[in-house]
Image (cartoon, rainbow, N blue to C red):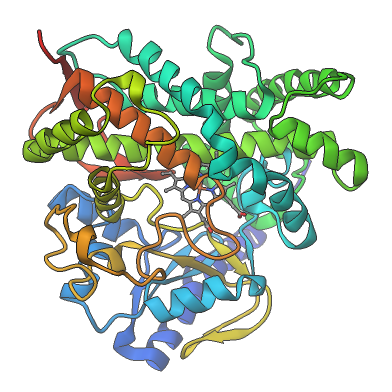
Length: 495
Ligand code: HEM
């Protein structure tokens, strides 16, 4: 069909070499000359940060070790610039820069590089922009306030009992998966007031998560095809011939899931007495606002599953890790839980937030192991400066939380796990940002903390939490997490 001469092929290869390998190198060198020591470059052809990541894992069992060491080992650095196949990313972590970016969110829009994002996530809150975002945030905000969410506590408690009663004792278990099932069920019930039937031999939720992860992971599984396609065709509709068989199968499974959700929405629209849940809030707004469609409601649910499950379950995983390597804290928290609640039945929406010690423990886990250390990348909408740094339209910006979380100026002795530090410090809200701050902060933070507290109370009342093996490696799979999935084992108390 296509016929190229050898000369043409050579010219194309040279073009690719220049655009993808030499252009970012050249741009980065210019920046280095301009900003000097304050800017750290991570250049590696096509995949900038990869060398630093693998060095962190090899030497320190931690992919993000470099970020944590910036304040102590490289205090002169203010910004890290790295390259990907698709351009340069500027990572900011100084408080004044973070503050500027979060207070001027209208200068940026969230990245549109998620594969097939149009079909599953871009109509969801975290990726929406402008008027669409304002409308959706308005619809959902009320449903995510503590006063509305408190009614979910009995459901969360029941799910904790149900899922943990089946856990095999003394065997390595995937605690993140177990807690993820609980969180996913709470989101689904809060949105639809129902569960969905198993699909393809799995629970509906596992199928949805597998499909989403499968699609997004195509960047990793088939990097050359995925990235060159995005490079050539942008991020919206790709021509059919560029979609692989694997992707076609994943998209067919996604469509099946969306059809089931669509049926449920149609059924709800025709109901007279609608339950008070997220879907009803959405449908009421759809009726008044023709810009909102059924597709928006479907993608909003997929978005909440995407943003809510891995984050919360990995924070719980981090809590379990901390409990297992700090047995003195495991004992203290168990005593505190016994003192505050006595029995699991007594935990309720009036007393769930009474314990400062539990809150301090969770804060310390988020400081040291936050599941979201990097924010979603933003595209710059117009030329502007952040501090001294000039950002060109269409360049990319991200924020990294670990340098601030491990800066001794903010947290004394930062590599020591010390929940008591939270008794004293009045910390700048732009320094400690596990849920971000400002208008694009995490809408699900009350839900997440409520779930973590229920999970911790149930776990510590019933089990001893132990680490499997001596060392674990911290890595990044959509969120900051432990590489080995089965890193925890439980022993029932009193046996
Ligand atoms: C420990 C758990 C969680 C952490 C650490 C976390 C963290 C964050 C962070 C840092 C952001 C801002 C991201 C950015 O600007 O790039 C964010 C946004 C968001 N989160 Fe969470 N999150 C958690 C749980 C949840 C839950 C349970 C839900 C929903 C069920 C949720 C839904 C969202 C949504 C929809 C946004 C986008 C909000 C907007 O742009 O208006 N998150 N989250």
